[in-house]
Amino acid sequence: MDGTADIYYRHHRRSIYRDQLLAEALTEGGNSRAMGSGDWGPVLIAVLFFVVLTPGLLCQIPGNDRRIAEFHSMRTSYLAIFVHTIIFFGFCAIFMVAVGVHLSSG
Image 1 (tube, rainbow, N blue to C red):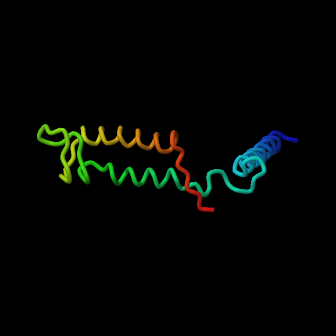
Image 2: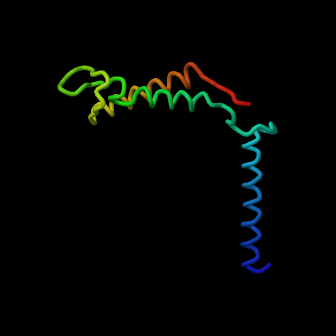
Image 3: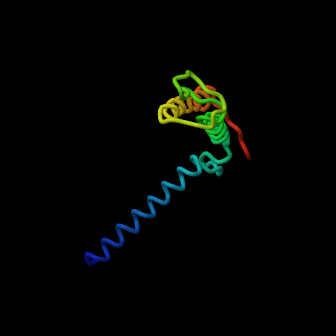
């Protein structure tokens, strides 16, 4: 084989091997169900907490005008966004990892 054909042959073998590894990973070692399909629990938990913890929608911590909290103010600040982000991450971690909420669709 000349150099160009040898490079093409090695690249082609590598892509076939990569496709086989990807197919095995997606079928979870022979199971025909794709990895992670049908588990809507984490998605719904994240969407629910994103809506509920939007700063200013239901409550805002810390509030404007040096208050601890404001309710339904429809305003926000950078500090409130940061605090709500930390709370969002904490609640998502608790419900997805510790509690293990799973909702299957199939």
